[in-house]
Image 1 (cartoon, one colour):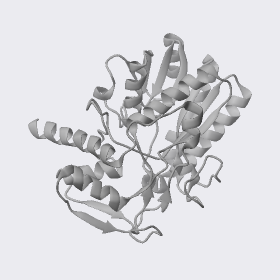
Image 2: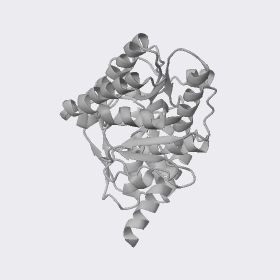
Image 3: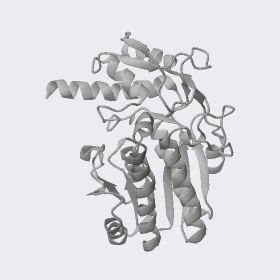
Image 4: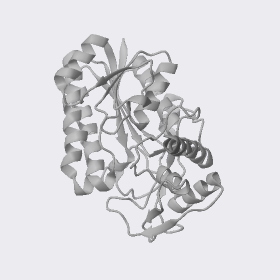
Length: 330
């Protein structure tokens, strides 16, 4: 039996592959390498280059490798882009997830773990936000994730497949051992962008919006280390193997930091300041969103190992430094 990881050559997916392999699981990765990297996939995993929307290919993979569970990361993730190109997001994140689910049902896959998002909450009325909060996404990205959650609910009710939908808050950091990290050059993740600016890989970074109703006027987010997040997925898989039913849960630490606080943490890691410029708000960005994160701890027994902003930033900075150094040497 094996685990199929879609988008396993991407940022979060590649960390998930390492976590599964460390746990002794057999892993198959399906990735079209649009934003993922072949080099990010652990050598112990089998990499198939293809698209999750190719139902015939997915069914072939499931049958050939005896896939027991699917952990689904593949999709598009840039919130502002979803506002300007919503059809891309409803295709990549929703329609293709439907095709992937159809293949799973046809082949009798038992468990499905979905990479959802805190974006399903939109602008929450209160923080921290818990799993039973009203779901009102403010971007097509968030809507595309919510639509997939609804599909999972309905498909699970009709077929013998259970699911876990893990709603991520802001994923950051890199493998503590320096094996992999966020490798996409034009990624929009705040910590990556700030590290690139501090290292001179970008001439400056922009802070989008300084007039939010927060302490310093910039957005507040709950940052979770990518390795802790991967561990939560593994624990969800273990839980699903041992228990019936479905789970929907937040993945965050329950503590938020503003954009300017993140900038200060990057300056600390770099040992110097860098060019930070103020810019207008971006469409689709909530003012503040922090996880109500007790459920994942209580149900899965999840205990974060990297619950510290400075540590998250230090791991991200070390990875970006490696990328910059290797590029200079090439």
